[in-house]
Length: 134
Image 1 (cartoon, rainbow, N blue to C red):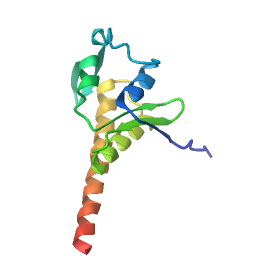
Image 2 (image 1 turned 120 degrees about the vertical axis):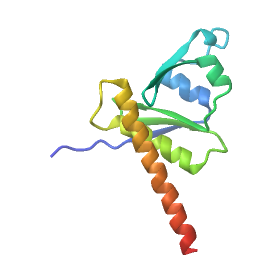
Image 3 (image 1 turned 90 degrees about the horizontal axis):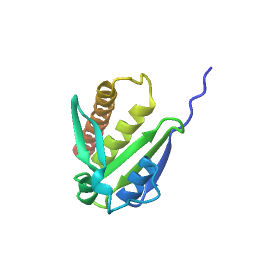
Image 4 (image 1 turned 120 degrees about the horizontal axis):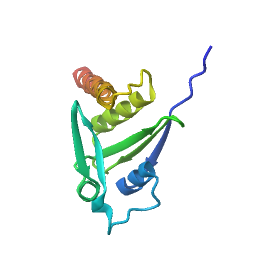
């Protein structure tokens, strides 16, 4: 019987620290950061984001990434992060650690998005049920 390695959670105090860990940087080189771009998929749409602009004005209240080799989810949250946003993020990142792992980045991101959205719906339903019972 195969053993399942537990998922570790590493929390960062700042978005900058979390991002630097993802990029394997010691610190952000603010003089040259605008030369860097982050590419990925939102649903099936590819995007290219300027890293400097994103770090200065991140629209999210939670951000993270998954490290497959160590089964670690790395996460940062702002002080005003809603629980449902954190739950969505954690489920999204955990999905990246689980099989099937799609070679196509769009499919992999879609799988993770669906998992995060489902976890958020489950949380919202539980909160609704709790209100009814009160």
